[in-house]
Length: 443
Picture 1 (tube, helix red, strand yellow):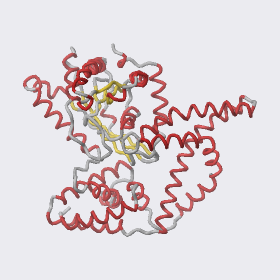
Picture 2: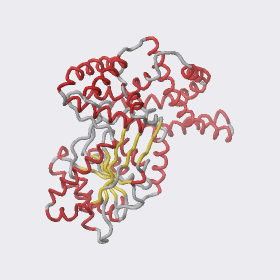
Picture 3: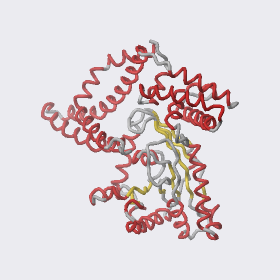
């Protein structure tokens, strides 16, 4: 049995700790289809890949069992970091960009993957072969399927088959905390259905199972296929989100909003191929571009815009809350501000790489406990009392999570007040154009 098939005490502690932080990184988390996850392996998760280690955490925090991950090999270049990653059930995956000669090193990871699946454990390979901060399902690579068939050939129990679970992950924002997370698990694909074809013609079998997996992942995520109008369709999906939600008579939750955005994109992609909608698509692009230039955080601004441009009771309550609890926010800033600033700075250094959120999350998880210990030791000299010192220590992480939520509410209030002072005509014009497009294509 390899080290990846075992679960150490260190791993168990780190999993509980990281899951605790992760579930507070988002304002809301909705997990759907987890009934599709078998209680036992051999099982391979196949998610869309857009957000580095945050994608892995989305699965790990949703899975009933530990998961072994394939991770890009260059992260293992430092021996110390590589050793830590392996202890956290991560194994290196070499790609062509790492050099053709290094591809042979994948054999060790393949053997370890076989061992994981032979011991009925869970494995995760990113079927797109890489990541991109773009709401598009890219072409799948065949590594995940080769791994599945490799393990299946070593399984002696004829009634046990490797299964692949398609997974769709959707974020409110890739790099900012305080937004939504949706994890959708699809129905599993059994290698059994392709076993005979694989024996007769392996390349054909790999292509067919790859096609099925892509078809099953696509409805679990927001997949914008258009290359010419990607930004337009993305912006319109959020600006028309509430209207489509009402049109489809869906309950107002993040999963339903994702379904509504998927429907909007489907309509726009159909319109893109319809010559009758050429002028309307161009008008939509003009309006969406003007909106996004003034509102770079499209998803957040569009959702706040749904609350209108006026002053209401909800806004009043939020303002009063911010005022009344401001002294708690000051306390949180005093004892969390330095660590928070360092995490933000580290995130800025990798901005645009797809690792910003992962770096900030990882830095917060490592750095903040160290800062809390130092602050507690210093506080012990002041209190000179164990009870007060321990109480002080426990207020620190609580104050951090409070600070985060205070910031999220402050951003919301700030955007509402901005909308009152600078009313934008673009949401209503986008809605009008969308209604024209829907009427034109007959939906």
